[in-house]
Length: 241
Image (cartoon, rainbow, N blue to C red; front, side, top):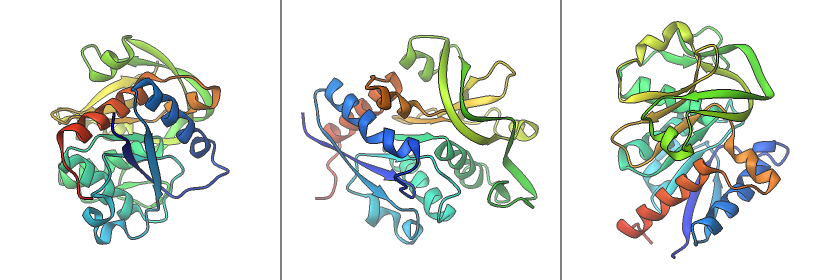
């Protein structure tokens, strides 16, 4: 199979556990898909100036943890490109939070939607501090019946690890209810932990960090599915050299 090229959008820090885990998780998933994967860490600064030029040669985009980003607008521009172009997209932890913001601003017209971590005085804090911090915690997520995420896991209940203090504001969840950004996972208290964009080849957002499976040398169904979607795009769409 041809090699897959992935953009890891975020601001690389070798001390961040998720950043250590992602290359390992991708290697494991690539072997499982009988292909090879290469990746570039793409810093958020400047992406918004010309996202097409910077990201056109990648088959998939992963918006990685460790926010606030150097440039929120850069991260949002990369997510927008993935959403509009049909490129497979995975957003974990901070990537999930910013995917929600991008959709709210660009699709729902909620231009004031903001992140309480980077803007504590936000008038519309769509992303707010979690009622209970999920830093270095493992918890149960209940998956929505019929969701793509449930099909990927072949389960309705999963257990995943977090390093997260922010998520979708429960008081503002109604703003995205009924949209094409479906909620596909909740915790035991009913708070949102995963979302997916319908009518897109692959657009998945999780507050948890599936990449941590790579630290234990284990395959992960979600990362397998992400690589498989990237391979499908590679085989069906000719990208610029």
